Structures are given as C-alpha cells and as structure tokens.
Length: 389
Image (tube, rainbow, N blue to C red):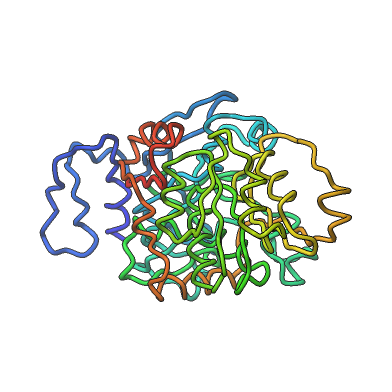
C-alpha cells in the first residue's frame, strides 16, 4: 500500500513542475514525475467543480476519494470534455433542471486511467489495469435492471451528473462500471470510448446496411456515427451541421454528402433531392437542436427509423401527427450505452481499425487548463478535447 500513499501525496496543481526525487529509481509505483514541492498532503487532489448556479467552473483541492469495498480507485490519466459538460459549464435550462440540486460537485465523466487500489469485494479488476468508465451506475434491482435494461435504470446515478465525476486526479468507481481497456490503446484515446459507445448504440438501434442515413450534428459522436454507418454498409450517409469545420470532419470520416444548415440553403430540399424524393431510411439526431429534430423527421421516409440521442436545452414543438403518426415511423430515444453489449461492440470496432479515434482528438491540455478546453469547444475550433492531470 506504500506506493498508493505516494501516489496520493503527489498533487499536481499547475502544468509545469520539476520531477519527483524518486523518479527513475526503478521502484514500482514511485515514478510519478513530481517534485517534493508538489507533494502536498496524502489526501488532496486537483479537481474541477461546479459550485454555483451560473456559467463557469472552479478549480479546487479536494480529498482523494476513499473507496468502498465494491469500488476501485482509478488514477485518472486522461479525461475529455463532452457535450453534457458544455451544458453544465454554460448552465443552460437543461443543466439548471437536471444538475441544480447536486451542487457543489465534481463534474466530467469521460475517463481513462489506471487502477491503483481495489476494495475487498472487487473481482475481475486488478491494480495496474487500464480502465474506462461506464458512467451509468445502476441499482441492479429495479424492473429495468432485471429485464436487461440497466442503462435506463429507474434509480440510475450518472457519473459527473448526479455524483462526483472524472474531472479530477482520482476517481472512485464501482468495479462493475470499470471497463478494462486494451493496454495498447493510449489513455488519451481510450477516454473517447464512451462517446463512441453512444454512437454505436444509436447507429445499431436498427439496420443500417444498404440504407440511406441522415445524421444531424457533427460533434464527436456524430462523426463516429458516420464512420460506423459506412463500416456497417450504409448505402449513403448524409451529414448535416451548421459549422464548416465539423462538416469537414464528417466528410473525412466517410460522409457521402455534407449539408450546411447555416448557409441559407433549404436543408429539407437538399435531403429530398439526394434521396430521389423518397427521404432517408434512417435519421440519427445527435445535435440536440430543435431545427435538426424537425428537419430530420420531415425528411424521413414513411416507415423509417428515427433514433434520438441529442440532449435538447429546452422543450419545443414537433409535428407529431404528420411527421410521426401518419408516416408510421419508429422513433427511439437513446440513453447512454447498453450494459455491456455496446462496450463489446465498441471494442470490436476499435480492434478492427475502422474507427480512427486518434483523429478525433484535436486538442490536449493539462487538467488545470480546462478553461482553454471549454473555450475551444465554445468557439467550435476543435472536436474532442482531452485533459491530462
């Protein structure tokens, strides 16, 4: 346990620090690369908090979590900013309604790291394992959990939303939620598995082989969805976004046609023209934008499939009668990843080399520089921003 105590003392408060005097000694667990000056106390770590009901965040010292018998302590090696984190940072209507009661707390949920301690009841996970987190913490006993739908558990707690999350140097995680990664996947890439899993769940909510698919929203999940659709044999993938840079990513990941929703063109007409007036077979909503939802439904063929992943900041109107009922479409809400079917599929796609997650990561910052990451994403100057403690 001595090396754990050393890890816990090594608190990294700023980006550039001298190296630890024990570095390079060859003693397992000691090569942390920090200085004696950087060692504060055995129980402190850097973390990113949502402390007030307004836009912003706060960098604070916090206690290193004390794990329970069924938990593992993960030394965070990489964490990344998700669209949900942007909602929380910006404090929009969704965040106010969903997060307000949880303040103050540590947010962030996309993560990759190394297990440095295990609880007494842990099995199948060992110290030294490289892991990512399934962020939906299910109860295991409700109707949904007992019928194979843990991802929509009635009593679910979501990491970084309902409980303390991953924007920190350490994370306590139930061992059932620790997904062991291939060691050849760098941590800064492995942290993006969770959004890739969202794309896998959404794309394979139904058949895509031989289908025409519209994907609204070319954020990281949407771009992954483009690549997945092409890998699964979609006939045509149409990517829609209002930002030229993100449409370029969609094209690079395999989109057959990109449509800008901000250049004054008629999105619906362009989609109908591209589908010979029939409409798309499959509509994937990943933008969380009312216009995207309505355009996608309007251009979905009768009998088509709509899978909705986007988180919308507030309520809005949809023409249910004409776009859903009379067209006889199948519409499904997508929440997270199926536990753990989606994770196995995600692993297979990564091993196949058909999904290039490295290309998705456009920026890497120190955790203490998280403000730069939020700025990059607010300005839409990057795709996936990774933070490394």
